Image (cartoon, rainbow, N blue to C red; front, side, top):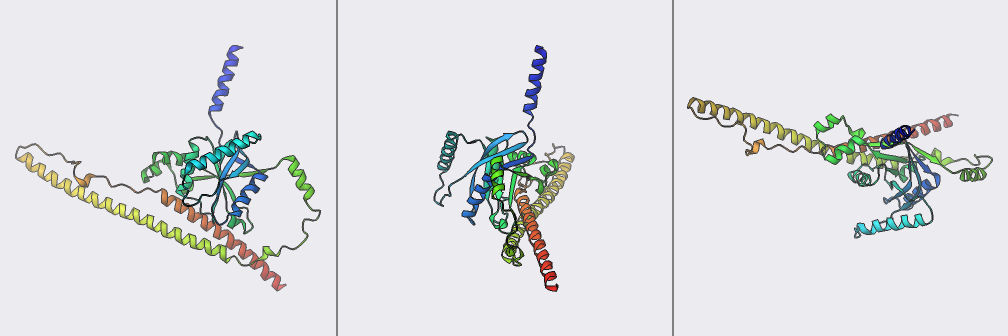
Length: 337
């Protein structure tokens, strides 16, 4: 009996050590409304806030949130921000509200969130929290009739490379890591209590369609499309600059290899003459020679992030233009009839 108890305890301990992968982020409807309200009130300024909840198995439950105060440009005191978070969590704990940090949320403008700052924030959170997510909300895209809300986390393979600060081509090929493997999008599930669901049912009208919503037939999408095209062109210019850095690196590398071969041939010819004269040959490598100093390879992180951002803008443009064509064909059919 004792062996059975000990064996079962060891099995439980072993299963707890292997954490199940995060499969879904479950957010309460009231928390989503708080995030939307905070982001829309200060749009187009970018805001952020804390996510609170529970980590239960493969589900990350987000049950509450609170906003961070917006700092002025001359206020760069991190201690004030940390004290504000601790005070807010203490107040929530006193009223018996979940106060476990599970991540943060932030607003974005036209999906331009894939930056080095976001990755650094993720790494800072990962030092203290085993699993955390970032909820991204885009008010400008939500104005087009889509709830632009997504949950992101960093992939494990990318975090390992980022800790080592090694984004060379060799390491990326070794880990089989491409620009699409930086972030992982986690499905979001909206959850409401039974009382809230019953209350929403009571508020729902008997006839859902009481008036025609002509805003859905608005044919003008030029402002949203123009901003996306402007940001896309800027990203293309940034990517071109990154490619120029790599072209300069490969030119420098090939020039150094040619200099090394020429120096090596000269040294071998000199050694042959020294052997003929009965003297000891000189070493064929000279670490003190500048041509043997390795050329530093530029990091590919910036180009990966820019490529990710370009893909995001292209998907947004594709979605907007698809909806616009559908509305145009609909209006054409209405005119013909």
